[in-house]
Length: 274
Length: 361
Image (tube, rainbow over all chains, first blue to last red; front, side, top):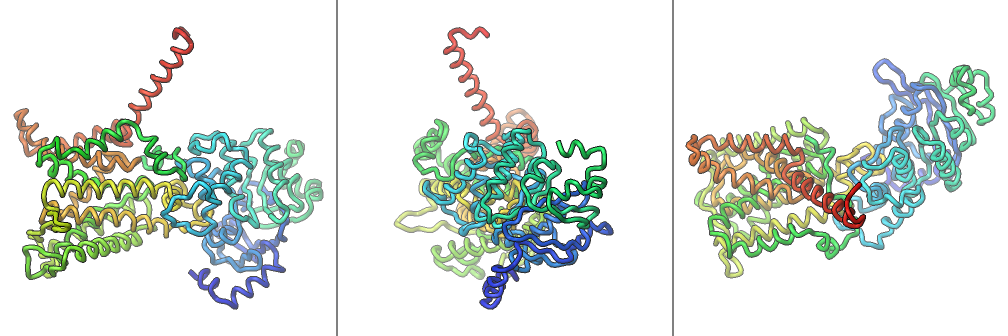
């Protein structure tokens, strides 16, 4: 509710607008998240410029997905501040952050199995627009229905758009994940292992989709496949045990001996480079 | 309960027009619609009101549960309580034989106000239980339902305790006595059709689609910008409106109301009706209600005809419930859908064999 009150307050709105003009797309200050005694994230400070594309790398349990969950508001951070385009969103519920242009995809496809492909995308478009409670069915020329149809086409799912999502093949579900994240007017997207389980052809499609996103849309991508991850970003953040331990350009990270040691585990290095 | 893997009628497009929708209806739809319209010409008054109209009223209450459970994944046990509350309010605000309590408002204020207050009650109860899921929702709603039952049983100043209210008569307006068998039948049919149509329509509108989204994946719904809690409360409001309207019809049908109307037994019966009929489609609850009313009415005769104790009729209902749930988790409507699909498939293979000219592999 505080979010709504903040939006109504004219001074707060003005501050928000001025802040948004100059601010980073995403800024984390000292964000920690504890699960009991376990610190999944500790004191993470990170800033991403508007339009910047960054990979977050790290072994399993490094805290990458927890980082995403804190940014989207699925979990509240135990301490620290999260700013989205200059606005403090730390206490906002997920839907308030989404309505401000933040999007995410899930590591394990998180879709609506009982609805058709088009309905999934339509819901995603509806979620960030008005009339979410409308009891009136959309008309044939409804702008959101058209937007949903275009998105379905963009991820090559038009042939199956009236099929139930539960009946789709795995790769198609991953493509639909991305379509959901692209709905509305995204300003910043969090991709959680989008290439996991995809075939080499599907991976090429994915790289194409990511690199052809409009340049004002920044994103963070968590990805184990270095071939995908390093090809679609301009900066890399390495995480280990809930902390950030290195940031740099993809080519520097790729050759960094410490990174090789920790993340690629020596013997895996060759495989990681393909 | 297999609410999660229901195969709802999803292939329909959100933008479909009424004529398209009607065009896709099968023969069964038109036969049922025709039969219901001309029913007074075929059926005796007993069948018309005691069986079919009564089944439609119970079906309406169960429809409100189907909307919540089938589209929202919310198993609420307060739907019969909402209906019972609306019935009580009609007796309290309107006219009944209990002159010292009834306020004798005309029906056209008593009934709408009763529906409004009962809907509000259902919505608030929903708001209380909506942050819980599964078995906890069942527990909270059951607690509210039991609390209401004991309140009506023990409160004499408003609810007149154990004896409740009698002498409630359906109104006379437009020169028609709506208590007559024929007019009451058509009144119930009109309400049932309206509610059925509303549920079918809303299920494809943004609100209904979003509700189905919260059923499949509430976390993702929040990640798409939806307020899941608000949507579930909205679903309670919509369902309560249907249940409350059914409650008004119910009290006009029974012409009396007492704590037993919304006791724990009937509350659970609604769940049975909805599950037996099938939670995947809005027609399911009506089918379940018809089966329930038929079993209740005739199992006594059947048992006695077989030389068994007629008082054991509930055993028959229980057995029937068990058999249906065991063999078809998605209710009678699920059996119907499977039969139809099998028929279609065999027809398809027949066609294919005809085309390939023979049928040898």
